[in-house]
Length: 318
Image (cartoon, rainbow, N blue to C red; front, top):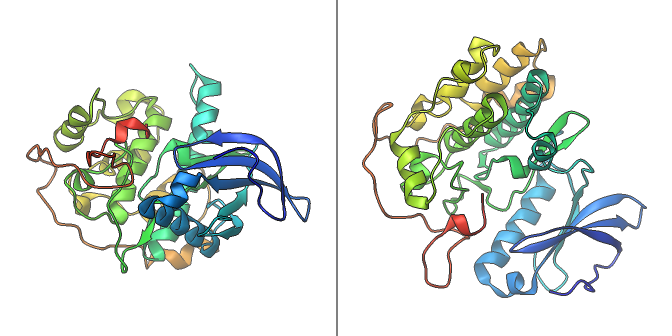
């Protein structure tokens, strides 16, 4: 796709980012508001699966409303003029922020605040019966110390079903096994993010898909308090439980949100209270309690399937 493609009602200012499926521009709409304008590549529109994924992102982004979810302003899900206009974050993603801080890490209160905001967003989504499926630092956006979860292309409502997906460094064991994702799968991905922000490292590593899958299925993360001793014990414990091998052993996003707010000395906001009783608890087939699971070689199908049919998340998602 060339850079001269235009979307009626928007003035393209400059390119913010380039991905495999779309370009993201800083743009100005007819109300003189700066927005991030996501425009799919022509090849995205030509491929059925990629086009459906973009259309899904447009529909869900415009449907949900929560202060800790990136706000969608307008969009067209399909066709040659497909686009999505969302809230623009000048500071970029959490990944961008951490790169600028390197080799330092976020101060503890700042890290707890970001995690609390992401947990609030997940509590809301799970209360709607939806799963995000791609919680990672690249999909968390930061502005003045607050965070918002974005990029809903892989999200779906569990009642309607959807394709298992995710980024390999953050995927839950059940997703590696090709099973359907649920709210507990998002909590697992959140646990990986918590280790990155609070412990300064990912809980599992690997140089290939197979190595990383084996680590998530069979190994155990180090105690968070050993990585950051000043952590509130309740937060450290929930961060570790979020990485439980069995989905049923993980806390809910609402449980984690409460603990993080308590650590920050804050109370639960009214808009979050309504979602607490309806957080997604869809059962996922269980394979044992905190025990290693057999290594399998089958890979889940997803939007990263290449021409040869081999799903290779290492090709793009990190």
